[in-house]
Length: 227
Image (cartoon, rainbow, N blue to C red; front, side, top):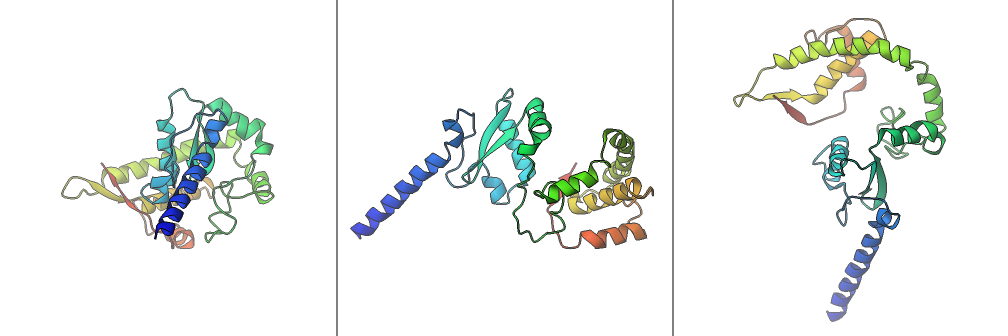
C-alpha cells in the first residue's frame, strides 16, 4: 500500500512538473499570456461545450490588457497566440501569408467533409486552389456591391425578430440554427442567383425548402434567447 501511495505521489508530481513546463511556453519566450487550467489550459468552457469556441475566444480577447497587441493562451497544453492589433494581423495574413497559409480549424479526418472544404479548414495545396477560385469573386469592388444587398436581406430578419412571439416571461426563444438558414438562403439567392427571396415571411418557397434540405439536415444547435 505504501508503494502504491508513493507511485501515485510520483505520478502526480511528474504530471505537475510536465504541466507547468508546457504552460510556461509563452512565459519562457517573454510573451504575455493568460493563466490556464492544469488540464484544459484556457479552453475549459469550450472543451466542455459550455460555450461556443468563437465566443470563448472572444472572451479571451477581452481578458487581455486593452493595449496588448497579442496574447498567449493554451488549448489544453498546446500554445496558441491570439492577435489583437490590426497591423500585426495584417502582417500575418498578407505580408507573411506564405508562412501562415495553412488552417488548423479542424483535423485531417473530419466527418463533415463538405463543411470543412472551405478556407477556414483547408490546408495546402487544396487551400491554394480554392483561394484562386474565390479571390476574383471577393475583390474590393464586388464586396462593396454586395454589402447593400446583405444589409437589405437583414431588414426582413430584424422585422421577423421584432414580431417574434414572446413567452410568459417576455423572452423571445429563437432557433438560432433556423434563423441562420433563412438568412443564408436569402443571401445566396440574392448575391449568387440575383433572385430576391424572403425566407423569414415566406418559408415554404421552393428555393428555401430545397436549400434547407440540401445542406442543413444533420445538425443540432442550442436555442438562444432574444430580447
